[in-house]
Image 1 (cartoon, rainbow, N blue to C red):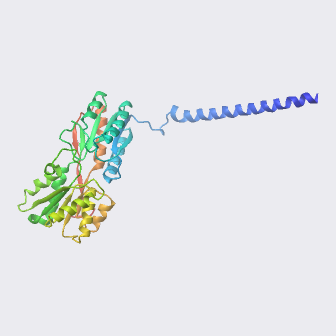
Image 2: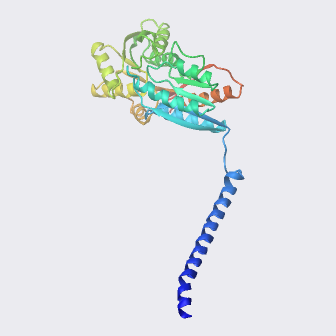
Image 3: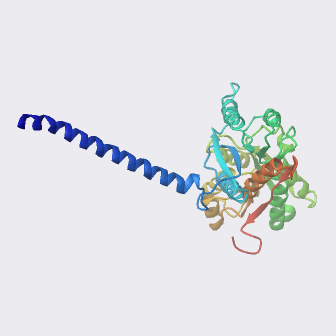
Length: 339
């Protein structure tokens, strides 16, 4: 009898363990169902669901312009009840092999296959966006390209800056200080993708247009910055060496502004050459505070981001058609005041 009891003992222990494991699994399943029901299935007000899905394809860079651009994209996406997804491509000029083009196309095709409600693309250097516009139109997905300035062959819809107005503002600032004695040097972007010669650049034409109102003031030289991190310094040094009579330098972006300022500091001519820069970051602000840079014209990248999302969603719901929109700028420090 005792042997029979000992033989049954392992069976009883195993049965108890099996029942315990089963009870534990039932408890886990029950908890999972409670959690699922309290969130996704019941969809309480604490769980936000977006009405739209928007993709933005942007260069992977720490440039402050794009930081503000992304800020605008996020703010407007939230206001439009849209989920924003960001894809990044490597910045730089597209090579003959089209490496950057292939990278951009890959992100673009992912967005198309996902049937998103809008695609925003900041136009990389050297890339014609008309093919993207045609693909998006065929898929009936709103496509909004973004750029500093609209290329001559651009699509009918997009959001851009207004470099021509910036040029007018920059030269107006210089004329208010130097008048007819202004001898201006201009540092332009290295980007040739818009198809402009240097004297056709919108920024250059804005400066040229304003100088017509002041006899004697002139553009002495215009150069393009190089792609390298020291491109602004090299451009400024080259220009001043060839034209030592320059007393004002106008810069197209933050890199050129910082580079030109460094050259002015190195040559010990701070105060003798006025620098009007572009855009804003900690270094540009520091140079303004020190008096090396007179002022900077800040392109409204936040407004560009907001307008891009608003235009895409507006087209999706049928309240807006394809259109071109240009955003403004502000000057720091403000005239007659502080930053």
